[in-house]
Image (cartoon, rainbow, N blue to C red; front, side, top):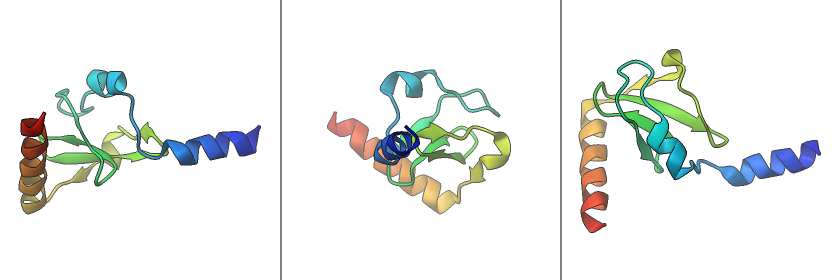
Length: 87
């Protein structure tokens, strides 16, 4: 059973259910979070903090958050805008 669970967790990767990503909010600002597949994280654009997704589980403990560089943040926002305009 343990081996099966480990295999499922490895296959899960960073996938996050769409419903779950709609419900989750930043633990600090209480604003919506954006999923970034490239960095396997949830990003709070309102305060510029990235929260990791480990084995498909979002780590939303405030101490786990990493402050984004302004250059990186601008690039991610640009990439996000480009992907939303395609849809």
